[in-house]
Amino acid sequence: MSLFGMLGTTARALDVQRYGLDVVGNNIANVNTAGYTRRVVDFAAVPPPDRFSAGNGVEVLSLRSQRDRLFDQRLFDESPLAERQAAMVDALGLAEVSLGASGSSLDAALADFFDAFSGHAAAPTETTTREQVLSDAQTLASVFRSLSDRLTESEQAADARVRSDIDRLNGLTSRLAFLNGAIASAPEGEALQLRDEQVAVSVEISGIVGVQVLELADGTFQVATGSGRPLVIGADAYPLEASSTPPTGHASVMAGDVDITAELRTGSLGGLLAVRDQSIPDYRTQLDTMAHDLANAVNALHVSGFDLSGVPGGNFFVPPPSVAGAAASLQIDPALIADPSRIAAAGIASSGDNGMARQLADLRDAPIIGGRTPSAAWTGLVYRVGSDVHQATRELDSRREIVHQVETLRDSVSGVSIDEEAALMMRFQRAYEANARFFTVIDEVLQTLLSLKR
Image (cartoon, rainbow, N blue to C red):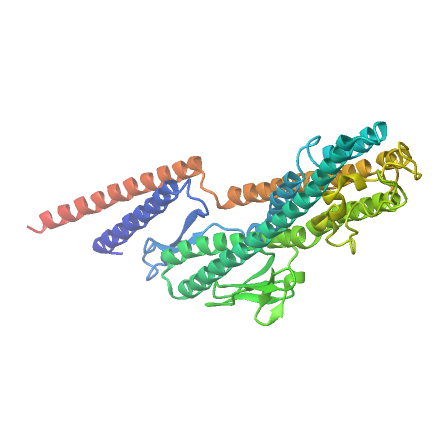
């Protein structure tokens, strides 16, 4: 190789080492950038042009992201499981709060109701004790209705989040479709930036709804959910829709004309749907059963008693037509509200008898609600909700730890290490200095040769 050729080879080597320093600098600059994948530059020796040349120096072969697709796929798999539990913890926590604090919710109203009948038994002919029974009974019915309303509000809040997640999901799938289209035509450096965002957006999508992600040969992602329902194929996005379904008006998740609600079991959508469609309706059924059985048990005794005038008692509560909706519709019989003297105290048609009032008070400890006392039935409901929240929280902690470990493993491959970049920076700096020195030496040799020709 001629001296002038050596100058060209060295100049190219200087550019290559400078490029390496540029890559290192970019890595260091993005050490705290979320989703950034460490860039690696690959060099290759330029082959010699003939057998009298040692070689043509070095060239940049490629710039690539140091990424392991296995860890990305694990994130796609684990994120929806963690986000399902997170959504369930939030939604179930709202349902738990709706039940009220211990000692000041339905348990207190039940205690006051039965205490009022005990007081009525102590003074069966007193108007004030009847009024107290009526007042505490109205409070009890109000608490039942309020609890039912709050559970409905919790259900509606979960439904609102379902609709919000669908909107957010559609925005993300549109963005991923755009990234797929851009990656195909982007230059190398820009494509790496787009691929970082492509993975980050895909992880976020998987957190909303469990997905199957397939990377194609052209670098684009094909994403599907449920039973293979496409969300993104190439540069095309297929949005989901929220369709209000009677009689509740809750959102069903539609993929085109197909209802895929039952197919969505993971991601925040899966968690919200599970709470909205399974957990809260189950809690409401237990509450309705309490109201239904309590009303029927009280009515069954009250109709066999006698009021202050010795007239047989009627229903105490308006009889619930069915278990469903019993808590939301629980009411005191209007005849008793109009005339509290019609509240039965006597077990026989005799003034001053308190047999019926005592029997009604004794319902406190009677297994009238599915074989359990009213207090035990309420405790069972509270325990069920608390247990569901606790279980979801424990599962969330476990799933988040798994996601954290996967992210740590991914970062060990793809993350930027300041120490490693500093070592590379020193290597490129030394290589640049050596090439610069070699360039100087060749230039001095040329100057010597040119001076000899004079």
